[in-house]
Length: 202
Image (cartoon, rainbow, N blue to C red; front, side):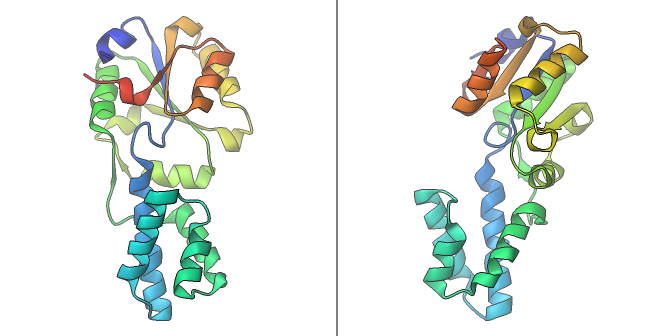
């Protein structure tokens, strides 16, 4: 879908973060790398083998119960669950997170056209902030306004409505860009136009 036509009559665009602006796997796989390195240092177990197992398990079955599966496969003490969880929150990544090319170009176009950009993201606020801080925004960061749904203890639809109210916008003036049925449903609750991020191109 042509991004220029999409926002021609809009004043604001609201994005989710994970798998919308960047691929979440790029964050998680780096967390797994750091955890594997930590276990090798602490327990003298093979980091490459652990990372290979975690990567394959993640790609096959997703992140659910990944620590438990890895601990069972490599006889890792369950006390390291704490370290695994902590890395998800505050890992210092070896590599910056990169925006999807189509989304970077789309957002740059929004800035040129002086349209407001908001990020409304769900999930642990500390973790989401850590991702944002380690993303290569290419100068876009100064134009972003971010809301953490879990910190505000509000449904996304409520946050969307508050954004409209605070900026004197109607639903026809804004667009939500997401990647999940939940985002679509939350937008529909207040009749906000919604599009899946993968449909955007320049």
